[in-house]
Image (cartoon, rainbow, N blue to C red; front, side, top):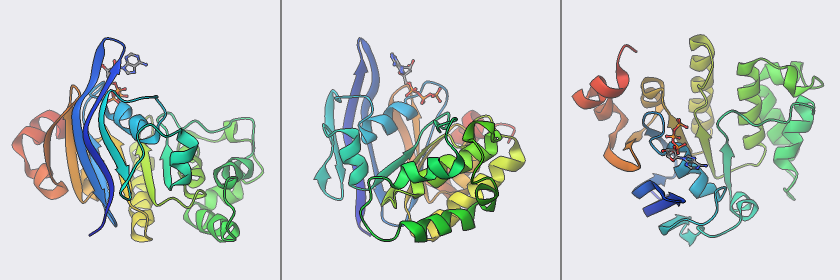
Length: 238
Ligand code: ATP
C-alpha cells in the first residue's frame, strides 16, 4: 500500500503550552484512519497542523505523497489534495447550499466539477432538495452534510474530518458515518478525528489514541475496540 500522509515526531506549541509532543501517524491509500481522544487531547491541533491552519509547527515533519508540506500555506496544501471538514462545520450561512458547494470547487481547473456535484447530490439528496436555500437555515445534520459535500467538491486525495458527530443526534450520526464509509469505498482515504470513539472505530481500518498531546496506542480498529483500556476510558456506555 502507498503511504499518502506521514506525520513524524510532530511538536506544536501554543505559546508556552506544549500541545503536541511528538505525534507520529500515517495514512495509506484506501484507508479510514481515526484519531480518537478526549477533550483537549490535541486532535484538532494535529489536523490543523497538517492543513497548515495554525502556522509553523515547532518541529517534526509532515509529508503528503512523499513531499514535505509543513511550512506550506493552507491553500497550497489544499491544492495538493487535502480537504478538511472543520470542527463546528464552518459553512457560509448567508450563501445558498449550491454556492457553498461551489466554494469547494472554485480553485479547480479540470472538467469533472459537474460530475462531482452530481456525486455529492447523489450521496446527499437532501442537499439537492435544498440547493437554493440559505445554508444558515439548515439543520445541524444537514450543515454537516454540506461541510462534507463542500470538501468532496475539491476532489481531494485525502479528506480530513474533525468531529463530524459533534452536536448531532445519534440517528443522524449513524447516517453521517455510513456516508463516510461510502466515500471511502468510492476511493477517498479518510483521516477522522473523533471523541465518539465507538462510532469512529466501527468504520475505521486503524486507529490512534491521543492523550495530552501524545499517541498512547495505535492498532487496528478491531483490536482497539477489544482493548480493555479503550473500553474503560473511551467506549464507556456506548
Ligand atoms: P476538542 O475535542 O475539545 O477540540 P482536541 O483534542 O481537539 O479537543 P485541541 O483543541 O487540539 O484538542 O487542544 C489541545 C491543547 O491545546 C489543549 O490543551 C488546548 O487547551 C490547547 N489549545 C488549543 N487551542 C489553543 C489556542 N488557540 N491557544 C492556546 N491553547 C490552545
